[in-house]
Length: 166
Image 1 (spheres, rainbow, N blue to C red):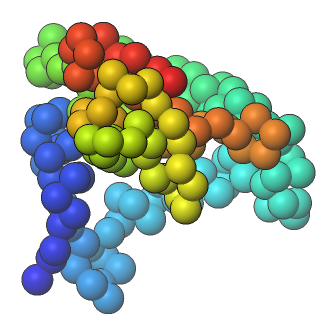
Image 2: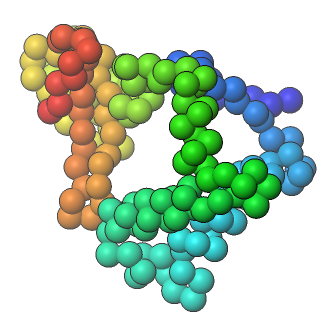
C-alpha cells in the first residue's frame, strides 16, 4: 500500500495535479520517471565526466536545460507531425490556470518562532528573526551552494500574500 507524504499530497491538490504512485519493485509502473531520467542523462549530463566539472554552476546547468528544451520543443514529433510548442499553444486554452499564490512547500520547512525567544532552529543551527515574529509561523530553506549558500527565512503572517524575507 502506498504511503504518500502529506506535504506532496497538499501540494498536488493545490496545483490540481494527480499523483500516481509507483508499485514497489515494479519497474514497469514507473516508466515515465525512468524515461525522464534517461533523457536527462543522455542529453544533459556528460557521460565521461563528473557533472560538477562539466558545469561551473547550477545556473549553467539550468541554461543547458533551457537550450535542450528549446531544441526538443521546436522539433517535429514523429507521430503527430507537430512541434510540442504548437501543441502546447492549443492545449493552454484547456489547461486550468496555475494558482497565483504558491503552495507553502515551495518556501521550505515550517517552523514556529517560540513565544519568548525570536530564534528558529534549522539544520542544527539557530537563526534570529525580528521580535515581531514571536509566535509566528515562518518557512526556512537553504538557497545556493558553497560560499553562496544562504539560509532564507520567510514569513507571511505580517501581510499575506506579501512575504517578508530575513
